[in-house]
Length: 134
Image (cartoon, rainbow, N blue to C red; front, side, top):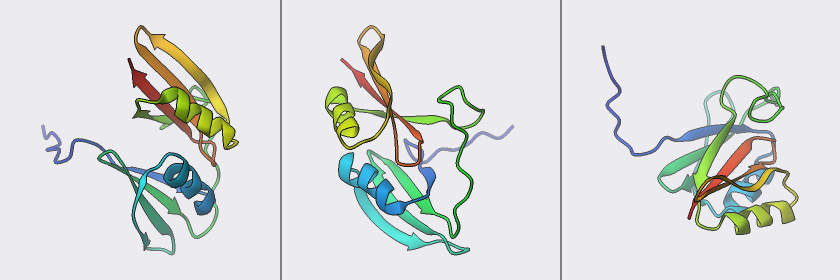
């Protein structure tokens, strides 16, 4: 049985976006993820690469607008529903997201002793969890 021979300490994440400018305003400008460039995709799409720790977020604009993912929060459908970013300023970043008009699905909440989370929606309604260990 083969096992993956992992060569990086994190995964990269592709997010298909409807409006790249709104998504860049959220991930790059609001959250502060560093641009790693952009490129044309086979088939006519376009990718914007942003660095989050050692993870690369790949924001992909398809040549036509695909269907939106199912709503309903974490339990709304099978499949990838959210991803987690560990931060040291959860309250501050959650407030900044709310002030910028992004829906807060879960306000700051101590999920276990010493561990606080919040969940916000990006411009396409994707769930982004922030986690802080105190």
